[in-house]
Image 1: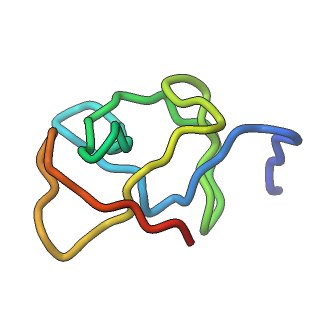
Image 2: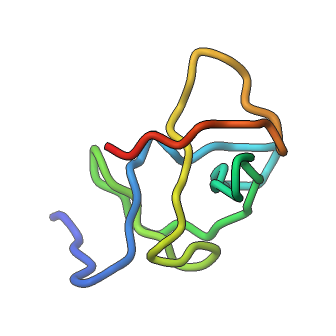
Length: 79
């Protein structure tokens, strides 16, 4: 049985990252990315529910082929 969270804040599942025991994302902060710990809820194949740590207007970084350290300079590309 699948679970549904109507009206929940969610993000692409591939944006979720692990750093030690923490789940988090890299959030765009001006022209840099910043690590932010989040609390994730239920997930589907493509989306993850966000319980705490993000707002609706936050922009998160998707995976890249290069390491993405906290504070790395980036150029946003909205898709």
